[in-house]
Length: 363
Ligand code: C2E
Ligand code: MG
Ligand code: MG
Image (tube, rainbow, N blue to C red; front, side, top):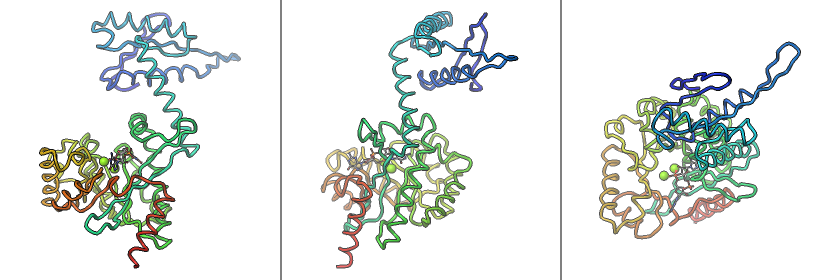
């Protein structure tokens, strides 16, 4: 249980847990699962091995009720549903909540297995200098090659991985795989440029993150100047003080730091000034409607000017058309990433891309 939770015994074998400050209602299922798991441990009394099960009912404030007696009554109702379902499970008062919570639990356990079975694959998307169409680097983007569902987009599983903490293991795997790949390309005489890795704030917040990073660099023989870490603006702003301190250590290792999805995260200019960053990545929502949408024109121009005055590099993501590129070049944002050049592609295809780039340079 968390510090802010309360456990009470109502009488007999009935207990109540009061969970305050729940971010999302279905988070209650996580504790319910834990209780069931703990209760499932056998109890040894003299020569007997005894088993206990728990049936758990969950009601939510204010969705199910706003008064304490209502909430208790509905939780009690839900508990009887759990008993009917064969005990040793949890039920929400509302059936949809139970379904949602269960599908998340299934997805989470599938994701754990997927990590073990190496079902995740990395795609790479080129980042280009728009003035001469030369590659400056690439971003590693993870996908889930699901055995029955096919290729699953990160938009579908990253949020849950972040919620459950599984992102820490996943991002370590991504970093290792991509760093090995880029090292290999450099050894083959290719020039992949700088590898941009998306870094979940949960991984950055791990106490041993810097050690993990150093070890990865050693194992993969990657040079720090080949690396760039992308952190989203909104994740940084959840705890800017901590992020500033941690990112400073990363930056001291001569690894570049980019702010992803810039413009969507409400950063204060004072935090921005103190962040040890090298690059702003203009969010694709501002690029989509360039050059026609007046607001997007102003916002993009403002971000480019901000980068310039803070002495930061700037790159636009999600560039799909020549018009968008022309606008960006005219406004001195030369670094471009987007479908206009290439969608994210598998390592084999990226290798062909790199060979082509090498050849066109030597001509
Ligand atoms: P992001 O880091 O902002 O990545 C950019 C997203 O825009 C990618 O989506 C990319 O495929 C997509 N994109 C690039 N160019 C274009 C374009 O021209 N048009 C359009 N419509 N889209 C474009 P993707 O690969 O689905 O990734 C979504 C998000 O998932 C990423 O956003 C990132 O936040 C997260 N993500 C992906 N891989 C990882 C990872 O390894 N670790 C972590 N922590 N997050 C990841
Ligand atoms: Mg990114
Ligand atoms: Mg982005």
